[in-house]
Length: 252
Image (cartoon, rainbow, N blue to C red):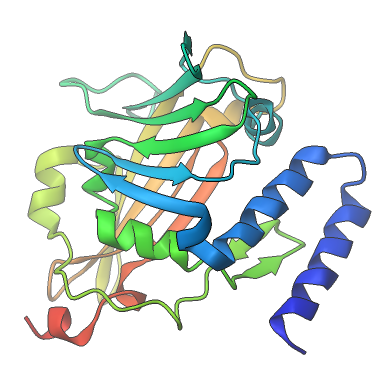
């Protein structure tokens, strides 16, 4: 069974399950665009990381419907509107940790309310290096849809490997501070950080979406950050960096 046939089946299942949810259709069409990444997207890296949408489809309210959370800041700009989601490090009582550790995710929409750019601030790039983050996005094209969990697993086989070294534990801790929890395993340690989304409103029953556990896995031998997993405003992200890393970097 080829990948096109699989996608048609997955789409049929999604539509049968989510009849009337137009935002799922727009999300699926955006997913299809990932097959031709350079045609439909571009990446800009400065102090932050920005994914630009050349032929945008998703609407602002699609993200409210998916996450049941509103952004921290909503501003009108000449060419549309700008949303910002602030995530602040908190302790076990959901109190902001001082000195403050925070990062943001920005969304820009055009006058037709279509998403044109999605950015992540510099602190987020400490746990998701730009080249690896871009590779992860590119791997979405040809990815596998899990209809039961509503998850998408990227296809890393066709992605060009990255020779860059991964961040080391001391460097990450210097930026993020001490974690909420450390899970010790035989060959690795998992550092759990908690970030609370500063949001205006939360739909009843979705309060847990504002609290985000970010799990960082470090190799005990090399001290390298090998995996990042977390949920950001309802969006689950999990990246196994070793699947994108080339031999040159591993040998360095």
